[in-house]
Amino acid sequence: MDETSSIVAGNPSQDNWYVRMLGFASNIVRGLSISPDLVQIGVLTFSNSARARFYLNRYRNSADVIAAIKRLTIGLGSNTNLADTLRMARTQLFSSQNGARTGVPKILILITDGTADIEERRTIPEADATKAAGIQIFTVGIGIEIKEEQLRAIATLRSYFYFATNFATIVNVLQRLITSCGTIAGPTGISLNHCESEIQHF
Image (cartoon, rainbow, N blue to C red; front, side, top):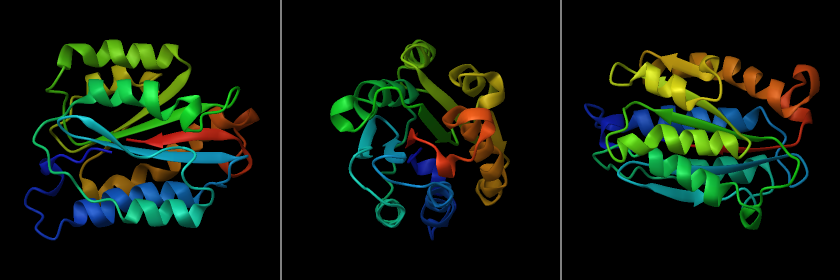
């Protein structure tokens, strides 16, 4: 998840982070069956650089994952480094030592209100390397500062890009996003609730 200062600019209560961004991530978790044998969740946040907040094998049930998400504070960096985010997802969050399982679909959901402005030229190559590693990428862009073409190029398929006009409307993409993830995580579009998968929120 994007944790740049733009998330809460003009939002002194920081509801865009603590209510809307974290609420969005929590609502994704609520639609899943979390366990070491079914869906595992990890979270990475980014601004000037990326940082892992918790790995796939850290929590074993939905309640603990949601509680961990609600504890996340915002870093308030000033830039957006999507290249580092994609690289860290591929090399660390989806590594076997951090809980990734062989033969299980791996899904990355990248959420941002900005455009890559650090390592910008590395952004698409890092996305391509991540996709080549078998990780399915979905992107969610919020507001007018994003570059839609960049986020569509990062996504595994151009249709894996979702747009919200502002933070208040991000909830509107939730069901469509979960449904799309379900077509990857399970056979014939079965609900994610009954599938094995690794999901990272960025």
